[in-house]
Length: 369
Image (tube, rainbow, N blue to C red; front, side, top):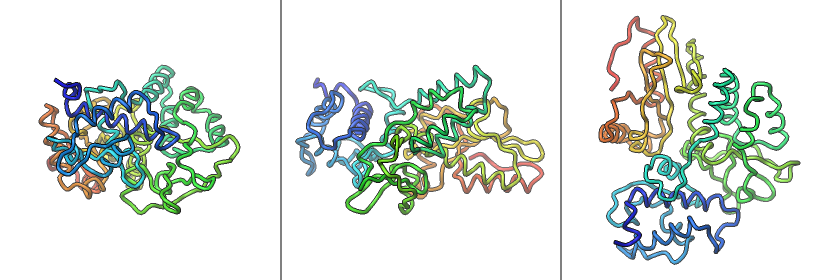
């Protein structure tokens, strides 16, 4: 048995996803010397994808990225039926689905997963101090400010509610990559606040799927020579905290406008929102923004029963259904195959209709299907 055959398809694709993320963090694009992880994945790639169906074996790491960019796995991996796409063709950057495959894959052949260890430490610290206000402030900062100048970072560090976790805050941000700079400026995405990637002479693209589903809009331009530099939230946190978090805060705003009481991240992030209706009924909500509904269906354990609720929902942004009409069906099938219990999944608009209906009726009716 060859070395390439030892790792099954899911492990191989997860390893490739790790390599794609390593390359995205590389400061010198297209360099000829790669770390051991990238080189090992490339070697496996060559063995697993010998010439087939018009696809030539890539003769370099950049050629490998070119081959898989905007192409589903099934197109370049013989015998696969996976529709997963790991690399954006326009920016050569990892897709959100690429990150999901790393987090959701149990094999982890490379020994590196994108886990939010920092958030775990923040939770432990805030629980020990019984400081939910510190956790909420920390969480909101990562959602609302994925990009900070050094001066802004200093200001945030001085906030009283962040004092218990200020050292952990420093670990969440890194110096903005030079690859995101054009003409001595960084450009923030007007939709999410993350830094955009320059394309060609005058175009920009955001890494987050939620923004790629809309027309690119440039927000603030930041001089790269600003004193102290520019800080950018680390990629896993942008993907799994900022992205879905913006939908969480938007949902909070819409529910407040309906006169509802909303508690964010109750009991230190047991779930995302606890909604209390005028008659005392309580709904629990967890918001997820996954590109791959099958990964979400397999991975999501469910919504804990404490704090107690009367109904519980997993809420997903509407643009996911627009991009995949079978999203709900795929989620349910994957969940059933994984032996997970049934769970009410709603897209945002449908969930808000459920809320409005609940507000207009003395009792709640209907199915969670």
